Amino acid sequence: MEKETKEKIEKTVREILNESDMKEMTEFKVRQLASERIGIDLSEKSHKAFVRSVVEKFLHEERAREYEKSKVNKEEEEEEEDGDKDCGKGRNKEFDDDGDLIICRLSDKRRVTIQEFKGKTLVSIREYYKKDGKELPTSKGISLTDEQWSTFKKNIPAIENAVKKMESRV
Image 1 (cartoon, rainbow, N blue to C red):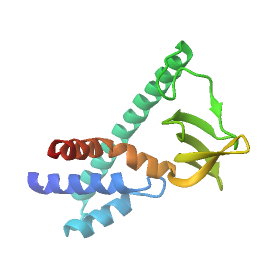
Image 2 (image 1 turned 135 degrees about the vertical axis):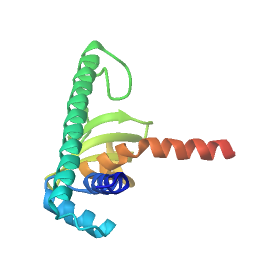
Image 3 (image 1 turned 135 degrees about the horizontal axis):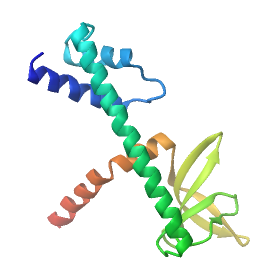
Image 4 (image 1 turned 180 degrees about the vertical axis):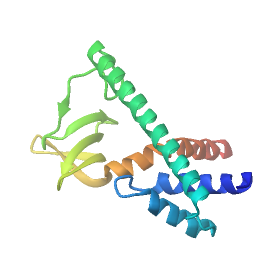
């Protein structure tokens, strides 16, 4: 197989894996989707083996990222216990009037919370108002599922670059 073809297959397979729900995706589905996208029959033995190696490498990298992420989470928990004062760190867990965990107060009226809704965990960034001594959420804000939050986190560098470009134009 030519180097250019291998690079094309690997790039396509990685794109598919990054876009996919890994609980639903199979190697066969990846091969089918990649075949459709690049117009190459990937059911041939050497192509199958190559796709398998790309998938395995991707999964290995994902496991390594998850391990690093768990290390970072453990370090953050330790920092929290040490009394760091950054947003979401160094303080006792705080809950709002609905029992949702407050991760961070962005301002007097805005906060980031983790909540359960219809069996799903959501990250909410929302404005609140006071009524009868209670702080209640407004419709101004957004709630993201785990998958949406992961996609958002993955794209933060691109968002930061876009903001820098906009700021440099001003």
